[in-house]
Length: 283
Figure 1: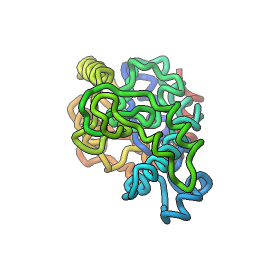
Figure 2 (figure 1 turned 45 degrees about the vertical axis):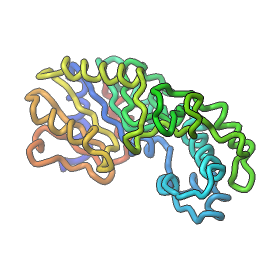
Figure 3 (figure 1 turned 45 degrees about the horizontal axis):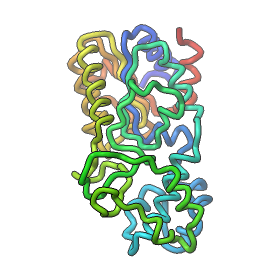
């Protein structure tokens, strides 16, 4: 890699010169914003669950085989409340918005904490492919309507006793009566409602618009959990477009693929430090 400042200067020059910026945001962006699923943030918020279930972090805890729905929803209500409803605005997301707000930009994200909306990105410029912690769906996907869950989630948290919620708070589908589920893509029962399809349509329109144009693919915190959504398509589009630049920010997987080495600027340094430098040189 070139020296840090040289890469920073090359990247902001490409951003300033671009006609379009397509942001691809993965879990690493939210981690950089302080929404960490491990360490003190986990132990401070989940001490009772850690003691009872020997949980190690919020990510792996999401797969815990709870024996009852009362236990499952006690955990998930706390998880959703901590990561979706208690965070508020974050400096990293706000700085990212400031970086692109005067550009024709679009956001493709696998993150589910709603941070792009919370921090003021325009709704019609966001496609969150994997769902949202703030929405419920039927666990059997019997219909394609989604339901806001903030009020019920907070009631679950308030009424949790010994890592269990009251049975009458278990959310049930108003159509078929089966248990509800958080709208997260984990199997083929993930509900893609009308808004999801409209956002996908706007994303496809954006891709058609940027074909062969001067575009920056700004990929932030995207690893290899679901690389087919952002990472691989961004590499392919960079390769196919002679006027494209891929700017990759990733603490663990920053390297360019061989075919795109001359068109990729990679960073494994601190995301907020990078944004601060760019913002001092944006126009």
